[in-house]
Length: 251
Length: 383
Image (cartoon, each protein chain N blue to C red):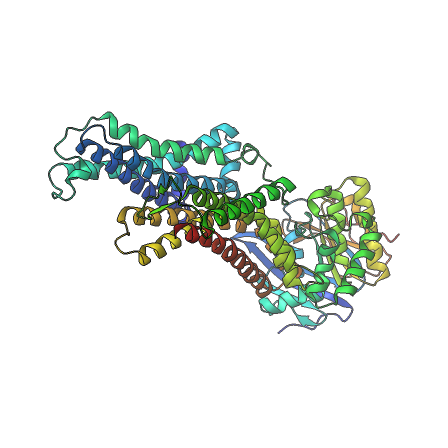
């Protein structure tokens, strides 16, 4: 019944509708994410950014519509299949770090690798490496409750990046951070995505941060206000609608 | 009274807690009224009245313990209730008073029901076998039952109110709390266990001189020497205090070496929760060990069993077990966010279930050790 997704789209959704206990969150969204791009989803609080990321990252089942990842359907997957997809293919950073409090920083970062069946040594080496890259290498053996929020958020970013998943979702990852730390975390996220050819889907309420993305779409009240069709890299997105701050800059 | 309207939104666990409190209070009230009835029937000047009143203390303590642990879990399990009351302008003192009032009301309800039954039975309905327990035929001074029965809601309410930390009733005050144990917190129980074991060994050594002042134990347990009883008390207290640190060490042992995710999550989780799980589990273990030892003695010694202590044991067991359940529910709700984060990472529910099962197994083993040691100390002292 469905048309095959475009070949260069790693993640592709068509007409997805989702409501939370009757409150509509997404009202028919079609979007394509190209392999290796940094896509920003902007919009005010409550516009459905988090729900969209949840649906794309196989956390929330969609009510209607289709989600495809690498030419295979996500919306038809059962719970176990979505679990496997999240574990093996997706990374996720939320607006809260959501670390496991009883594990040290490096154990938190190594956990997804261990869950995916990596060896102890490989997991902890990768964890130490990523903590070092995020400037939190010296607190690797401390537990999250002894750290400040910006350090915890960096650990969460390291946890999402350490397994080098093909797609990383970042749902307002800079919400708990000051401007300076936010810039650094986003720079690391985007540069890691570019250097490892990861695809990054970044939701943010701050139109300023769109400058880190290759392309941006704006979401208002569960609908896309800007064209979601992939645009060639490095060119501005056409049809910048109103004040929705759709920019596309490539630094 | 406003807080009571929240009762309309009660779900099964809340209702269960409320009903259990009322039921336990009713049983304690029955004990209290029985001692009053006996005191009325007996001739003046007997010392038995005081002993019977003292017998009411363990169930009263058990009800207070359950009320305290259950109240302690309210901020964790019903954060929206605390947030709503705070937003409505209730300060920390008022919230604690409301939680205490709720418990006190449940206890009052239970006590009043028992009092009504007591008064009805006194009205020449009960047969002659119950007459001395009810003080039948003797005029009842109205102040006596009221004073006695006020004790139950007061104790339980106070325990509930005091058990909720001020910080947890303030907005954003929910903290995960400290996890480790200080050196003194470990040294003191270890010392108590060593002293207790040594005292018992001295008291029970072959050829020990007969104690000049044997202590007559209640509940038909015969008599024992001062040293043996003191040794058992010190040892049991030490083992109970040591339960928390032992659980934390068990957790470390589980996550030793190069742990798999299962062992890592189970072990570290246990270490982190040891501080909170320790006290209710220690109390339950102590009570179970004591009850089992008593039952064993009753079975071994003919005509020693006693009905009243048996009823009391059931009540105390029920209250301590319910306290453990309340604490488990609290820990579980507190970890809901972490569980969600783990599931988002792609951890399978089976792995999380396995971690809980492994943790339960480890806790069970530890408790068997401490409970077994407590029971062994008690059984040795009884011989």
